[in-house]
Length: 158
Image (tube, rainbow, N blue to C red; front, top):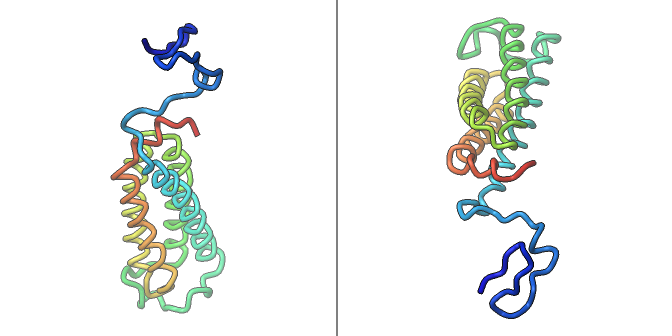
């Protein structure tokens, strides 16, 4: 005999406690890797914020970065770079929140934005080498977390 929510006695002879009746049960496909998805969402929010700040600095203070325009991989005005970083940053923050909610569209957008972010930071490497390298590395971790275990966050209502 098995226990049910209708108050029957379990195989051991004890009735189920009130906790057993109201506690949500995790799906068999959910693993501890869901933490990586939450990590990816938080990192996307954080990286997006950093990208936006980097973009605002480039927009409002052209002299902040020490490399001449010719020293960049792609020769463009720092204002253009600033708007690029700002747009990527804002989109990444929005997608980060949606990734934590388990939205499929956010997983696809998150991977695309992380790839674009890595490429933009590769092109911006001469202007800000250490920071760009850190962002590229974190973009790779975000891509891994989203691609491998992104669907598991949907089962948790965060």
